View 1 (cartoon, rainbow, N blue to C red):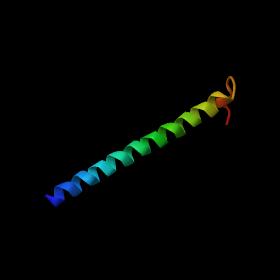
View 2 (cartoon, rainbow, N blue to C red):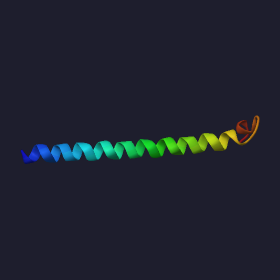
View 3 (cartoon, helix red, strand yellow):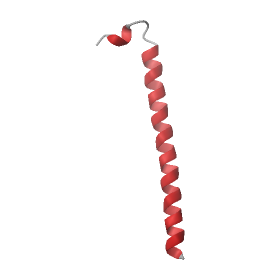
View 4 (tube, rainbow, N blue to C red):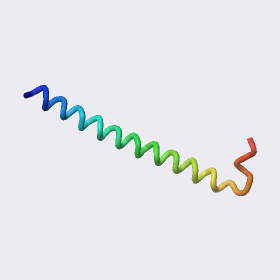
Length: 47
């Protein structure tokens, strides 16, 4: 019975970690898109 409780705890920990990771990645992409949008017309094409 103890192994099942440990497995459930590990699964929940992994799900919570995945949710935080996805949230952080979404925020990073949102910031990148916001900075690209603020450059004006055609400015994103120049390198």
